[in-house]
Amino acid sequence: KELIKKEFVPKNKVLVIDNYIEIKNFKKKNINIKNKKFKILCIANFYKYKGHSLLIESLSLIKKIPWKLYLMGEERDFRRNDLKYISKKLGIYKRIKFIKKIKNIYSYPNFSLGVSISKTESFPNAILEYFSLKLPVAAYGIGDIQRLVNNKNGKILKNRNPNYISKKTNELYFDKKLALKSKYAFQKAIKFSKIKNTLKKYDNIIKALCVE
Image 1 (cartoon, rainbow, N blue to C red):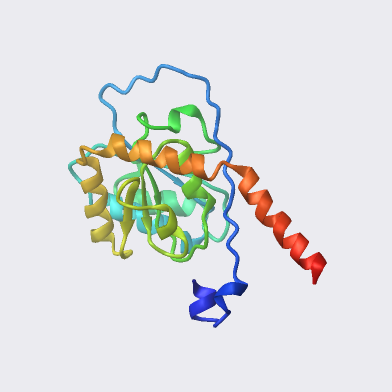
Image 2 (cartoon, helix red, strand yellow):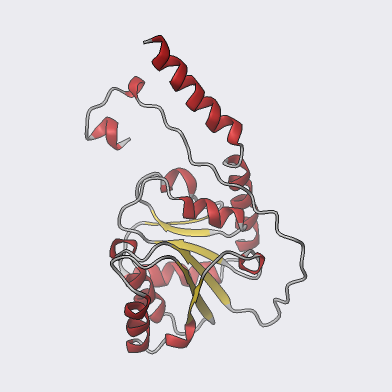
């Protein structure tokens, strides 16, 4: 859309090839969710524009729900120690955990929500990762995120204001349809797990270039 609207590229010259996600075949395991916390997963390398500090600040404003944030990513222009410092300053250090890889325990219903509040994105694989874990998603509606996230499988965040983000996160905690959103999230993952569709588009492009 940005190519068409901002760069004035003719619509018939634009072909969208979606990313592909492999559905994780986790071994079935009984997960104890008694007294469970509202566990939030954020998959994003530690760039400042990804909004990790904003997310931590937003969650610090939520006082009455038992949330815990799990961060997965590689250090870039932001370090883990930077985020630890921010969380300590806000008094929520013990509610932040850094993880190295995805496991079956990060799926719904043991975890409740995947989140993305990046300032800029195109078609983020992290959203597809959340869907493959059956996680409803709260995401800032930039780039192609609005093609992925909706009211059925999560919530589009209309701005990046900490008070707004905390309010919408709080609403999702009390959302009685969260389990249903999880179901729709996984259905979305299945849609993007069909690699044949992606390969077919690439094949068509190659054939068209050969003809030209």
